[in-house]
Length: 340
Ligand SMILES: Nc1nc2c(ncn2[C@@H]2O[C@H](COP(=O)(O)OP(=O)(O)OP(=O)(O)O)[C@@H](O)[C@H]2O)c(=O)[nH]1
Image 1 (tube, rainbow, N blue to C red):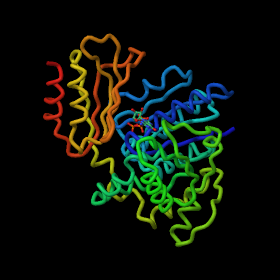
Image 2 (image 1 turned 30 degrees about the vertical axis):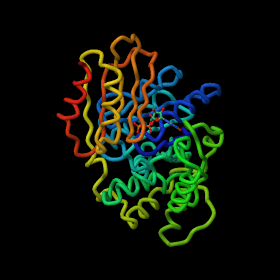
Image 3 (image 1 turned 180 degrees about the horizontal axis):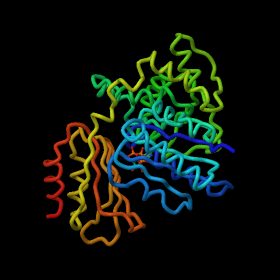
Image 4 (image 1 turned 45 degrees about the vertical axis):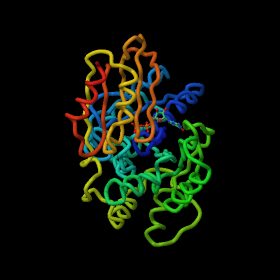
């Protein structure tokens, strides 16, 4: 039996790991082996720690993007998963800057093709930032292209973080998303909360949609059951200018990590996160605060800072920063001021 593959895509900090946690909690109550394959841009594993405790194996691919720089590792990782676990489902969480089209391409590898059945591309859109990101990055071709492809090639769309937008703004995001992808069902969510059966029964529409888009036609959703027709998609990609000869967004994205040497002042650290420059697109990690025993997981996107106690004391005290044109020395100096 083929393993059903779900690709979870969406921009940095949109809520992919949050959704994945919900999905794993749900799948734990059902029969079947599930394996998670997760990819992080940086060399530190931050999200993997959040997925411990569900009882499913988690394979981590760090320090690169499976859509391009470590696409080969994705293939190898999948082969290893298939031979070690005979899974019913494989859930792939991509990095926030992955182009899902390229991840699909990697699944079509001859040695994997007969063993995998791509069930769908599920895209998590950060409703609170989608329009802003589109206009802010409109001059950055590869970034805006990736953000749009994450929507265009989705088979199911979640408009997540809907709690952070007004009804009016949400309608505008819906309109923009539907313009990019009129085919995929759209679910408005908070913290990825939705009927997860609807996610698991997602229907493939990507290839048909791409073909119709190319010829200027639109129509109702059509079903593509397996990854067997990717050569057609490959042609479409080329004709749409989506082949890998284009500069990848990944090439312009930088990451670096910082290992804390001791506890920091909680208030100063929170201010530090809020004050991070706009070219830091994402920061996350684990830290200790002075006067508190538990480890704190922190999450930063340009409009949100979350700090919450993290029970599992396994992870290292580390911060990961993701962005473009980062002034690493200045960021580290500002962070170090939080020790005082
Ligand atoms: N207010 C609000 N916060 C959310 C929602 N969904 C997720 N978050 C928070 O947003 C932050 C980022 O969520 P993640 O699930 O880690 O996002 P991600 O897409 O996996 O992030 P990367 O993998 O780093 O790109 C976390 O602090 C979440 O708790 C939501 O619907 N509303």
